[in-house]
Length: 72
Image (cartoon, rainbow, N blue to C red):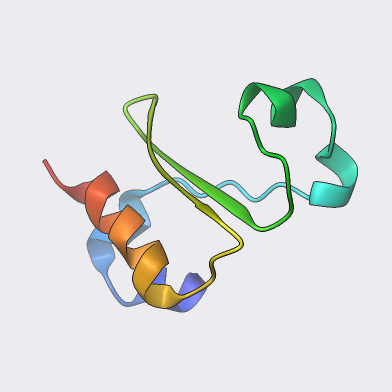
């Protein structure tokens, strides 16, 4: 994901928070966001979820979320 962010200045405006699954699995935080498994990416825009990837690590899929987050 870092290479993707570095490739487009507008993606640098997106706040990325990485959460350690082993530490936060089963916590109220992961339950509130409905994160049930490792390798889950949830993208928000203005506090609303706009997309989610579960066990998908392709740059194309991740970039689609960044495009949605940075579009007007």
